[in-house]
Length: 326
Image (tube, rainbow, N blue to C red; front, side, top):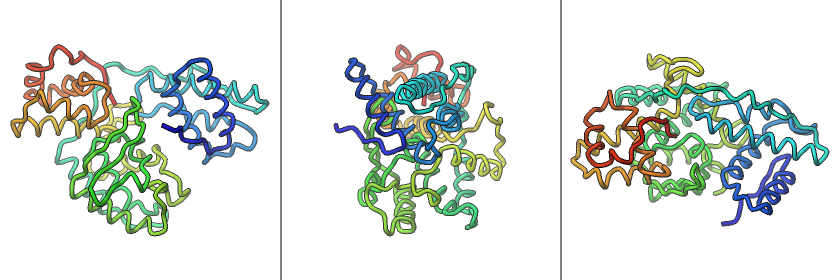
């Protein structure tokens, strides 16, 4: 598969650095994906005088749903990029590894109830049309339904292009996501209708390679932090308390957790054979293994003991004791 080209201010240097790593025999697959994330971010920052601390810290600042290893990989990568830029005579801020924050290994995801999900959707559907939040009233009803209804990571949703959202067949095409997996996901009929309505309002003059969720401000993709910030506002309107930054959530990523748990609950209710159900759900979510999907069972045992009992019967030997997956 042909690699995506870099487009930002440091495109040439990123291409050179990636080529150098490959010559050394390194696969550099996850790093290449993150280099493109960095490349996209550089397009919305002033880089005329080099790699700024603002851009670097934006790239490595830990998001609520990140594991410690996620932040660690970003910090080590951006340090390599900065050092390489310096070798090319370009000023660059080198991030201190001490910025990595300790994460509580006992963290448990927040699992929304179906009533809470309905409330979140209602608040999104009633967002007023205001000049300071252009397109919010049509953007959030779609993306929140997509995150929950398809169990997507926020980065997967924001990376979708117009071509990736097949409204005729009701399919989403996810490319090179975490674990380097491509997936084709069916959408619920309600979500398809929302996607069609959104497309008709936003993409009258767009081309297939434009981002599906195109920011009205930059015409690039939406910023994850901005989406999360507005999501917290919707939670407040729903009366769902938030633990604050670094607290106990709920987080945007918890819509994915809720999708997984609610799907398992629905499988049980419908009498689906769990030997078939868990592998299907694992593939749908893009997990690296059945064990990764099974971790949700451990983390939600108190709320859904019937799921735990069924899973233990068939998959107890491969479901790890404790670790949050994304």
